[in-house]
Image 1: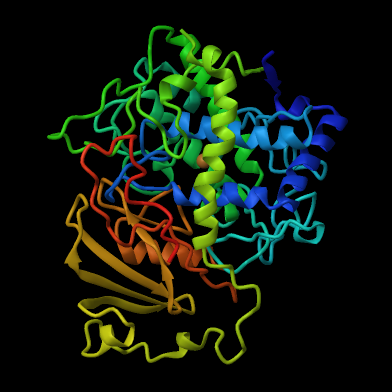
Image 2 (image 1 turned 90 degrees about the vertical axis):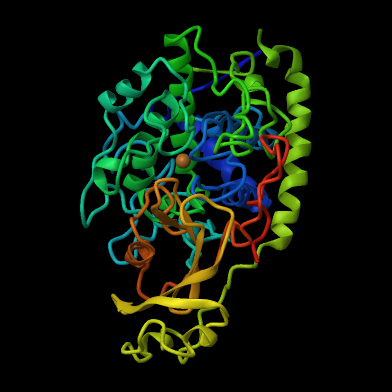
Length: 287
Length: 179
Ligand SMILES: [Cu+2]
């Protein structure tokens, strides 16, 4: 039986408590930090050599789908009733509302050092970062980027990505001019505010820990990526015959030879392929 | 049609085993995060170094233990010393194939290229900057007083060549080198 991933704004008090409890327990057992490391280790940008599995690549969506499934599985081993909630940042847009409450992710970082001091993921509550890009061992956030405010992506921003009937296009990287994948991952042209779209822009809006290589340290990561995953299912519903691309690996004369994962190829670190996880309705559904 | 329907049982097993196998060596190789604050004498000490030192000055590269590299920028930005070398050894990568070595207060800041030629760092992963200097400054913008880089990286420093036909079948060159 498929289980349901709910909108975080519709969780009951008990569901919130159990989700937070399972995440904290996974951290206590040491499992959480392995997820942080896995994400760090798979960040291969497109201007370097080597295979890109997780970012700036067609498999951005299936890679994170598997990563979330893995995490959810770990939570469900601790508490079988728990599923990953998603945060619809097109609707829950306030820095003080859901999910930034004391019974979920906790609030914004404090002014002086951006340290998160409220909620269950504050250092005082035992959420100590073991793997980080700096020597800070606490979570930081700067919701909305106080010194130079930016807004969350809007429903319109998401809609323009969902409208694209093609999954991804050559050159299959952060410069791909079209395709749902790059529009939702959010690598726009150039640099600066206008170039950060959808998924990338949300990382920037949260700021602090969520901006760096160790972004997984902030449990907001999972709620954000669950929504990105939901958007993939929405895109699939809208373009019923569209599939993951590329269907076949780029050839030896292609600049992307050996650098992207085609539909039927295994997606490291898993043995599963993008085709294996295009349809997950048997495993979970979004409500 | 749904491969998962047939493989659902297998999916569960694969997830559990593949993940454990992959993360174990990474955990072993990762440098432990320094848990203690640097001694007062050490903290921020290098920020006081002579800012007039010229990029490319003789001995500059040696001083940073990067033989064959030349200093390209060296400045104090918001109280932090940003130092960047452009490596002379070209690597198998798009663009000019040049590898940068950038430090903030003598701690390595790992920069990576985007296909459009811009740079991102471990501190700011979801956006990029036209030059290494701007990427380093953006990283400093994120640092709080007293906060220092940990040196965490993805392990692209080796610039490992792409194995032929690596697509999907190999883990590529970017793994497990948390040197
Ligand atoms: Cu993300």
